[in-house]
Image (cartoon, rainbow, N blue to C red):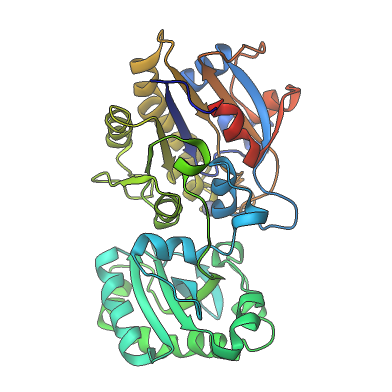
Amino acid sequence: MYGAKLMKYIVLVPDGMADEPIEQLGGKTPLEVAETPNMDYCVANGLLARARTIPSNLAPASDVANLSILGYDPHKYYTGRAPLEAAYLGVDLGGDELAFRCNLVTISDEKMADYSAGHISSKEAAILIAELNKELGSASVSFYPGVSYRHLVVLKGGQNMQDLLQAICSPPHDILGQPIKKFLPKGKGTEQLASLMERSKSVLAPHEINKVRIDLKENPANMIWLWGQGQKPAMPTFKEKFGLTGAVISAVDLIKGIGKIIGLDVINVEGATGYYDTNYTGKAQAALDALKNRDFVFVHVEATDEAGHNGDLRMKIATIERFDKMIVGPVLEEFKGRSDFRLLIMPDHATPVDLRRHTADEICVAMMGYGIAKNGFSAFSEKEAKKSDVFFEGHQLMDVFLR
Ligand SMILES: [Zn+2]
């Protein structure tokens, strides 16, 4: 049996928060240096553990990691990132279709200068995506606009389907500063993908929006980058699996898409941007509101991950502190001293600022609330967690948390 009657279950995920010891910080991690009284309180009054959210043979990405956290074994359910985002965008994939994540990126000297085209606004991006659809779209190729730099291309696979599914496509945030030629899609039948990417340059580069962006010294969206492909996944709902009602709160389509596919309510919070300036307080309030008539809430904050990708140490520490103060704080404020809740805090994966990409390292987990015994730690950090003898296989953790 999962979920005792009237219990509330809260999961808080600071994306990519985990890091590595940094020389500049005297060998400490950003999480160790950041002021995090609320997360430390959870550890002191609960359990500190380790978890592996990225199973062997899978790339360390937020889709895989968040499926794990939600209790879905990625080896069983993961088909690719784009179909999860497609679900959120309301794009229903047919059996012969596959979705690709389509980033708007900035290329400079044929190198990947920016995976986000300067975090281009959704409004500007929608115009560019419409233009791409007009110029490059066809009966078998469709562009769909998403949020900021994150968009979607749906291809009718035809005979090529299996080859395209197997194609090796590099996430653009993993190849920053590198020559793009080395990382164009590889494998049988991928000429079509490389050609779409190549042709996007001549549609995007001369576009008025990019001229203005360059004038404003913003990174232009001068190419598309296709990756993360997959077919529509088949997953049981959260209710079917755990018998609980719940909601997901996030700024990013991927997490909202996962929520939608597993039947959680997707709650949109005004000012939730997926970036440093996200509306932290609004998310915390939305989580508390969501729990009034639901058993479970999953709150995802992207800002910590973006700071890692940008190699911005100061901002990484700042976003961790904001997460602690403005997300964890209000939740504790509401539930501290009560016995009808459980709280789980864990990054989905590490995004070390020195590496500027995700790693598959074990991550730290804090859990407190009804029936969770203390295991003697007092601070939430990667190093402390290494000393903990409690270890979870990522997708099995939800099971323990809800029982
Ligand atoms: Zn990331």
